[in-house]
Image (cartoon, rainbow over all chains, first blue to last red; front, side):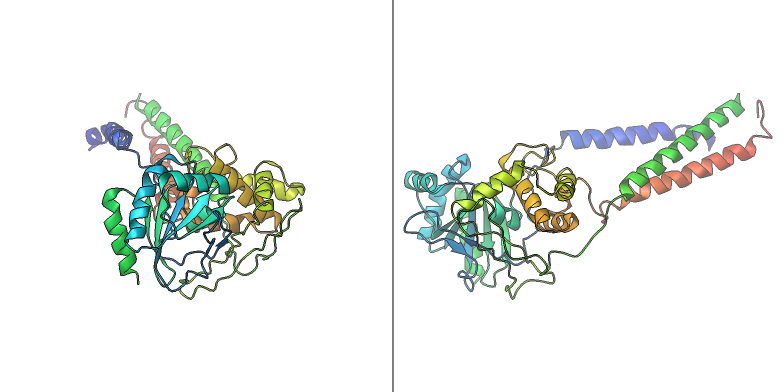
Length: 174
Length: 202
């Protein structure tokens, strides 16, 4: 009994070292998932960003599902993502853009260069909508259902493999 | 020889107990929760620098809002003024020093979501700046810092704060000091009790 107890500190140390080792070599997850998934999209009303395209207000979007894409002209993965959004638009999926910390000129230039899949683009200068959505980076894409509920959060740029799934998610959200 | 070891064990366990006590006190100093934003938050924004008239929208007309209200003035900046105000709020202290101190204290406990190892008070990332502006703006309007914190936790989870609330995941952190304290007390008691018998060589 006593002898067994003498090994306890060593056993505790080995256990601690094992936990530390496991945590050290586990790939670090740096994604911060939004807790807003499953809840109502926060009400907002953003001014228009590009000429000829409306701004973004949740009140006007009620009753139909859509993709809410958080992007910025200064964001590199967004460049790769833009053609995928164009494809989604061609498939009949409404894509609403929230341009974070951006200026109208830069957004217009970005859309001209990389393709424009947006039905509307709202300017979120101080990240208020981004913060209200629980989004922590660009690009991110939310699927919002017809009932105004956030159904899904896609972190990172939309890639070729994601297009079908996102389109299906919006279809199912009717 | 044995007695000495025992005395040492007793001293160590007392130290452990003292340490765990202090840890428990450090952890317990927070965790005050207040109501959410509710409808209490004023729906008007001030535009001190002139410029556009920011029309704030703070309504919870979502029929699907589950349980809690989501009212929050997601400010709608009129193109010019809004961003200028936000930029100023990120780095310029509030005029009211009491509110500034409260906002500052909250900023130091909030995690910068893009830098992750820093608080938003320490970070120069754009998103941290916007979070500082949010905190200052809300505190300036008379919002409780605890309510601002809760609002962010609702969105980002307890991850956003360096001072996480009590939950199933953090329960062990709170209970461990108590368990260590109990263990230490038990070891100390056992050691002190046996001392008269085993002065030397037991």
